[in-house]
Image 1: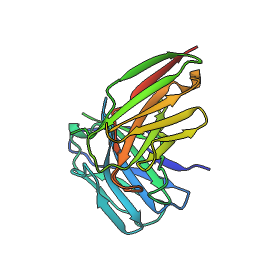
Image 2: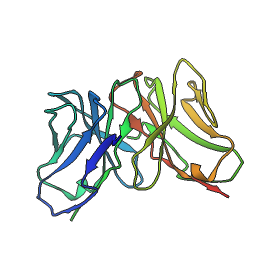
Image 3: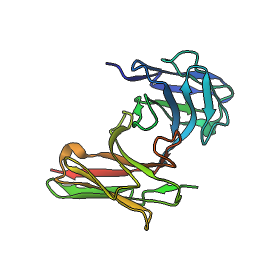
Length: 112
Length: 113
């Protein structure tokens, strides 16, 4: 059982480049989330989705876009990478908001 | 503005002794609290939770205590084991099942054999 799978695990980007962080879950969960964790800080919610076709902003959405075309996939897009977006990104999912979220292993992103 | 605070970045405990990890919050609307455990290069994994209608929740070696008047919660691990060495995050939400979890900065626990 794979759970929540994030790719890539590591990536280095140049300022101004774009990329998509992939997140897939095989648990048929409707609710999916993207967080970022900066060094020495807690996780902060970027975007979330309550089902296919429905997304909403979290605490720190600026500079990011998401889409949810299927239940399984919830990609996070950076259009114009900035050094402030250097962080570890975690994707999570759950079948219901009252049930604790399952997290992927993260993508470590550096922007130079 | 950090609404959930873990003021101890690290804690070292001898194997077999009690580990106590603390967490404070500022938002009185929070009513659901969770603890997550994180190993290096892995995502956080859920450990234990508590609703504001309770002041204690126990699961095996792990107990979470909630003091609403002080806006404080703590995680007790008894007895501590070397495999408990990890970073522990406290998280809170404004209603049970809310989609916006607020996380603390984490406490790194080291259990010394």
